[in-house]
Amino acid sequence: MAARRALKAVLVDLSGTLHVEDAAVPGAQEALKRLRSAPVVVRFVTNTTKESKQDLLGRLRKLEFDISEDEIFTSLTAARSLVEQKQVRPMLLVDDRALPDFQGIQTSDPNAVVIGLAPEHFHYQVLNQAFRLLMDGAPLIAIHKARYYKRKDGLALGPGPFVTALEYATDTRATVVGKPEQTFFLEALRDAGCVPEEAVMIGDDSRDDVGGAQSAGMLGILVKTGKYRAADEEKITPPPYLTCESFPHAVEHILQHLL
Image (cartoon, rainbow, N blue to C red; front, top):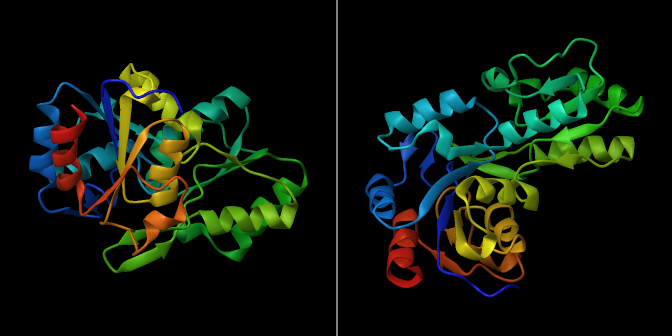
């Protein structure tokens, strides 16, 4: 690993770290204000695929988070970019609320499959349609492969199990664009104007947030909110740089020890 440099950027996960659906993590708004007072660039990186960036931004502003649209880097953005690069017509297996982020993309007579979190569409007929496209040679693009996420009513299956089912059935491998892919983190850091050795990632997912960030060369801070389960920090190697109770505790550590 390259030598650490002075901290220039903090990447922050959203769902499970700053909020869980329509409830903010206690103290998160004030902690974000404190972080913004430090000489670092703050960017928000999310695998959320169940709503468009505009809807997500509206949710955050209702929770009184001071966040602008250009500070949010989503896996939906990365997926659209890949679709445009490949010049394919995707079957979009995403929540209807995420469709605005694909506006203008040609989807008739699909020759690719793009899959995100789409609970209303994860049934046999639709998955079988995706299966048949893949068997005919269509590429599979996974917006991310999270195993599960946190809702108000408890943990819920993410898109990962459904992506894996399609991979297994078709003997193919998906191209994954969201966390924990290194390219996702590196693109977010490029936007922030720094390199991994100058950045830290805060998130509630030990593998996708912390493990992915640390594989890219960043420091990773795991928070015990959202999807966190006891001993999650032991599921990755190396372990998180820091495991703490919540986003406000992570910010306090950054302000006291990393600046």
